[in-house]
Image 1 (tube, rainbow, N blue to C red):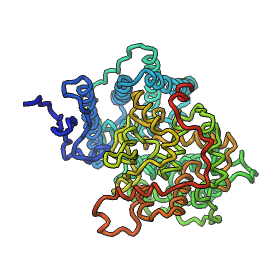
Image 2 (image 1 turned 90 degrees about the vertical axis):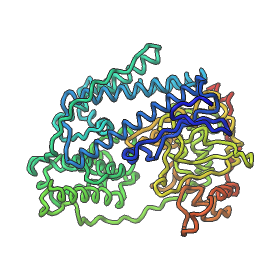
Image 3 (image 1 turned 180 degrees about the vertical axis):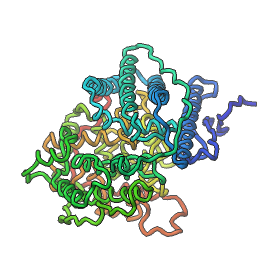
Image 4 (image 1 turned 120 degrees about the vertical axis):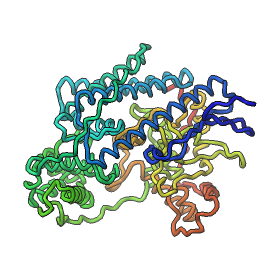
Length: 596
């Protein structure tokens, strides 16, 4: 009789071991990725092998973390349903910031000791060190200046999310919230300093988290109407919604609210007039549609004044103006239903006539000239890897986008196992999926996962193979990397990998004279349109196009649920870009990478 280890199951035919552990049924819907159980491959080595044991311990730790996070979300929902908030006492603030530091340092320690080659360890250390030093320099300056407004702007969302992750329902209108944001900022400084000390070889243990403080919740006592500003009321609603609000809706509301505050301060609801809102919309209409990094924090009135008279700068579209107006109109209506605003008071954000500017002509994909100018960049023709381009991501992401027609985040979250050899045909294939585990993002996600589409598998396009994709994959495996782009890190409340790279890519094209004709062009997403045009020209069927791009099938019927969609992926072989000459693009090689 073989050795029996709890939660570890070995397939008698293949010898592959898997860690499988069920989640309690009441907790499953609170998981980041709802499912019945956690599964993690332990490989093909015996259970008693050190590597199998290490993987099993890591899987058990991951299960514990997911359980703790789900339990916290469950407690948070209960607090919100009961209309209660947790008071930000000194004990709670200390607990939250210490728990944040401990969690992050434990994850850092786990990632630091993953099996990798020496070269991969050095690359990871250098990338993490550069990022930590830049963040630390800015954070220390803000602390030296005592710039609490900037600290609140940078970290209030993250600090609030940290409290929610530990099961606490706090309010931004709490008079001690700025104190918490400041303590959170100090914790980040200590965290980056600890990571740098670890990089120098010093042993820096994670701090001991104090006991969870006794909950001092209180009924969600909204201030009386005369004492609460519209901004405070909306912020409270975003943090304590009666119905869950999507991250997109929250982000859109906060953006509109910031623009309104920059133009009008923080008036009480009964001080907001229709004329005030109309003037605000007129001011917004004069705001540039896109801004350089240095101007993004400039208040709206000063920004409009700075760009006054610049006829070469496109302004916000009527569609964008309507989105900002309707966001605040919806929050006013929601506040009135909750009793935060007098229901008899007219909604000053509703029923405004916004001039419908002619719809901007948007190119559907790149022109041949634009593609040539992109792939003539030194990244592709000379093997350069500019600072900020996240290493090999600067070379491969655009090529994946062109040849597979995927969404940017789908490419950014690829892992090494997504590039594989089909056991039946022997061909090299790839997949876009939401089933993989990502070292930095944790779980892969697809935009269409909730509607049951998006997962797809297809042969790797020949140009990607010719440009050295398999050599790149082999080098990643040799270096002990599990993800395709090891230098990408998550950014923002959605924890996506692409945004940090996308901002750099857009600026890099501009700095190198790549001009996209027209307005409203998207420097990376245009590849998706380019692929669609090529697919139609090459005779790819509609159903196959939908599958390959991660859409639901057009004109789907009940019968479409039968059978596998995988055969549709074979139509990827039809797609060619006959007019595009990529002969100047240098194929990737390990030797060239080592020289950089």
